[in-house]
Image (cartoon, rainbow, N blue to C red; front, side):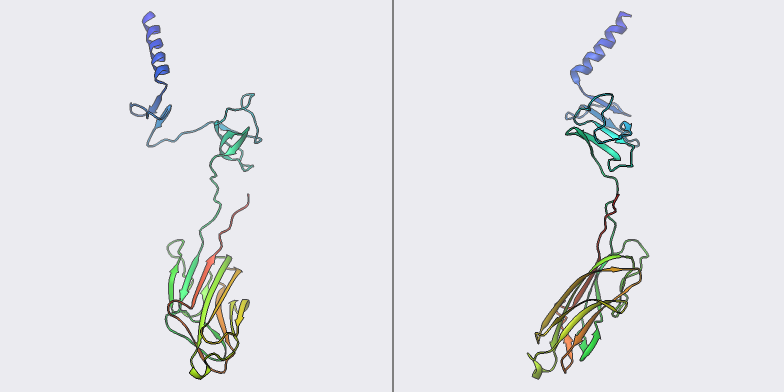
Amino acid sequence: MKKSILFVFALLLSLSIKAQVKIGATWGTPSNSSVLEIESNNRGFLPPRIFLNSQTMPLNGGLPGDGTVVFNTNFGTNLGGLCIWHHNQWNKLVDSRKIGKPTRFIKLTQNVSQVMPTGNSIVNWDARSIESVLSPGDSPMWNGGSDIIIQKSGMYCIVVNVALAVTDGNQIGSPGERYISISVNGIQAAGSGSFLGVNSFMNLSAMVYCNQFDRIRIGVLNGRDVAVKTITSPNKTVCFVAEIPTVKAE
């Protein structure tokens, strides 16, 4: 009996002197920087699970010590999940909710100049510079030509740069209306005009809500009495369409 008491006393004394504990499937020395080290390759750490009914809820009849960690099972508030006590209140330690979602975007360019006769024309795109694909098998937003097809409903930012030059040398510098527009399913959503003459760079940006399979087109109005061409080098006639990330309110 005395030997058992002495053994337990010696064990407790060694633990109090070492002040470090390692829990794991295999025996080993804990890290010098830790008081408690838990090691496992197939199990997780399960903290105390408590239903916190307020941000200042006490534990066991008193205020918790700074740094106390619990898993709040009350997901009816914004504190559901891991919480830590600090500054006399519970604070969310890790937010496991998704605050955003993957988005679609595409950038199109013209590599070959397009003739724009007097009147209204639609810009035809030649190349896809970049496009996001959220999962294998997603339909592309562009298959050639002028139409950009929305594959996912949401709010989109559309940015367009169009550069036009006069083809007739006798008309260089002469005034004339130039106008670019963004249309969705044939209905204009935004537009911008210019009277600057040769090498007129026109920029237009807009935020537009689009439904799935809506078709976006970029239009050009040439008010001159001669045809003009788009300037394509280096990437001066481009269009960028990107879905704006959204945050789910909870």
